[in-house]
Image (cartoon, rainbow, N blue to C red):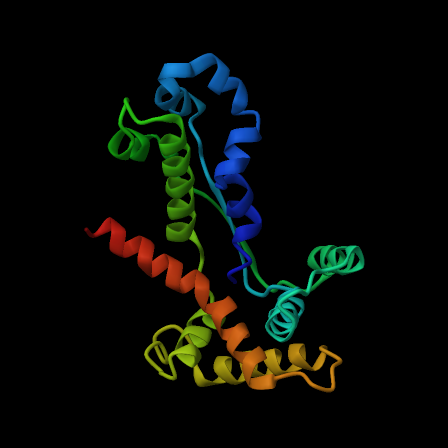
Length: 212
């Protein structure tokens, strides 16, 4: 989950990515008319929703490594392993959603006299918000959010007891892949709940912004 959607949105909506992507040609061309140039680009975010993150246990493991050793840094081998598992690992259902262009939001929230950095920051936020709104939430996202909050708010509405048992068994199996004698299972489970709850949390925040 958290995760999951960021494979798309994190690159394309990151402010630095906007600065150094092909959009830089527009910066040279636009100068004082950057807002209109982004409207001409007709930016249309694409949201890719993954049911499972095949690297989830590696990410949870890294959280504990950084907790236990603040100086911990991933090696090149770790990065290669993450890429391999990310490409070949099980992801469950995958749903592609072509969102509506963000031109309407650009016209509404970006002022013609906004400076360059403000415009880039707002563009990144608009893309993220569009992706959060269109992300397809799976039962595991609701289960993780309920487990994170020690609640059952979404039980019966967005997932069944059987789906909860299945997902919790999946998490246990993923944690088993972490071959450490000193692995902190409660800590690792909490990180799983956070990772898989984040898409739901982000979507609820995006919806609340729309209702303001």
